Length: 516
Image 1 (cartoon, rainbow, N blue to C red):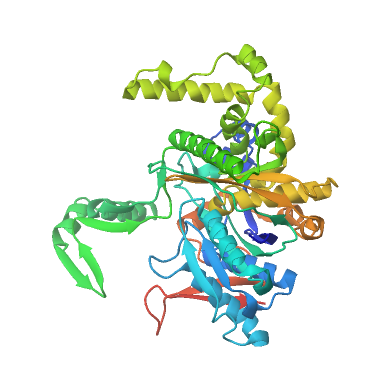
Image 2 (cartoon, rainbow, N blue to C red):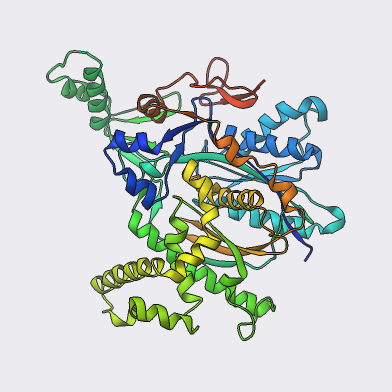
């Protein structure tokens, strides 16, 4: 197969952020735990004019402009997201619409007409899936055809106010240029995969009792100063029709069907699914590497030692070093150095040491979680993590979770940091571990190319992060609830959402524009 991979990456993040110190004070949380324990410093918050489509389109424009790309030569724009704007129409089509507005003047109004676009969704791994698919497509075209595609990631990682996931929020979009003979990273066609159907994090279509909806409305009216009227709730419910259909909206007096942007999740269970999925995908990757001749376990250094950097999906900044002890353990059990670790923290728990019951399985999982934490505190793992993982965390600390884009934000973070530190990464291998709840993991690797510094020096990631505007708690909550209708910062030199619905358009139709 021809050498294909990542030629360049551009990222867009909101210009607004909520400082984690202010968040901790607002919610009465322990800032030390959030910052020192999880690595959180700030969360990016979308403005009123920003959504998944605008963030993705702004990243695409940044990529196109920086590389002086001809839109007519872009064969596909594949979007990975779990924050879709519609149940049928791909968010990627909104992105294409904006790009045509921007580039149509120079390249023709139909300059993207022959571009293939689609959304891919599998929680946080959707963008990795989109890239995997696009790499195959580019390679299949052959070097002479030189197919060029853009993989977009865009998400608003939003949790219910006051929930246990609220502090991990973040947002942003990005665009990855995939082509032959890339300047940044070649990605060989060797992928380890692990898929298992679990309910660790999901966004179900929900039914809410009309009684709850009406009660909440009356409570809000009372908070706004309206006098409380005894028995009003019961009188309203009594006069509601059993059902009606108006403007194609089905109404039922008992329930209201809704779909929320915020998820249902089990944090501890999700962490276990993450660790188990990545470990299993790594085992699968290792086997494929042996079968392909890429790796000889008899003579070669272990894979995780060959990887100069290890880039993983980061729902919060320190997740990588908290999760990776499982892979670290699996890749070193047979080495003499593991005897020292066993002497220090004891023998690892094994499933066969526990009863084959629900209680026994829970006991093993708790014991394994404890052992994983013990591994992370050993000197051997600390050295490993500091040299291979630490730089990937830096941008995540300042932005928060980007869902599908978190792994690529981590990649940009480490490459810009290595550029700033004048590290010679040419020819080095990096390991990448994607994860999406539900659950799937993919493990693959990249080979850093000789022109990587020319690409990384243009990221300006940390400089741009230092130019953002902080939010106070009142505006943060208004943006979260959607009650902040006016932009906090007037959009400039960016795509913006300017209307949803309105006169002479279909209900819910979204309108975007480039704001000079």
